[in-house]
Image 1: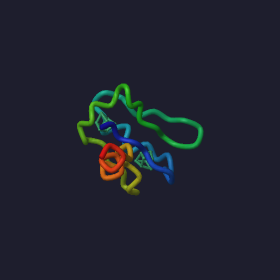
Image 2 (image 1 turned 180 degrees about the horizontal axis):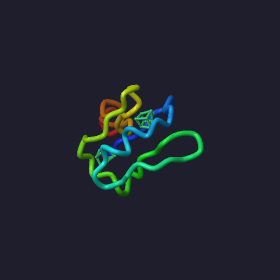
Image 3 (image 1 turned 90 degrees about the vertical axis):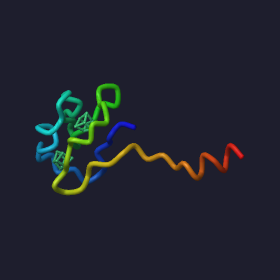
Image 4 (image 1 turned 30 degrees about the vertical axis):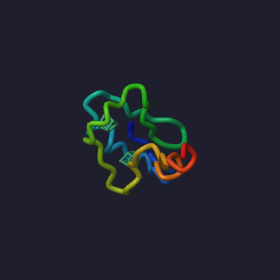
Length: 66
Ligand code: SF4
Ligand code: SF4
């Protein structure tokens, strides 16, 4: 499950240095993770707590499937 940079990114650039496959790049509003490149290694860290995983509600999914 690829990482995702959540709202609130202050564009400090710290997470880009952590990524071994250069999946993180800068966009006008914030930095973003390219899900096609991210290998979910977990090396990226945001000092401001904006690095998350792509939100996926498994409980909801199971409910829908049941
Ligand atoms: S999980 Fe790994 S590959 Fe994905 S953005 Fe973070 S450092 Fe890069
Ligand atoms: S380390 Fe956090 S605040 Fe800095 S660019 Fe990455 S996601 Fe944005």
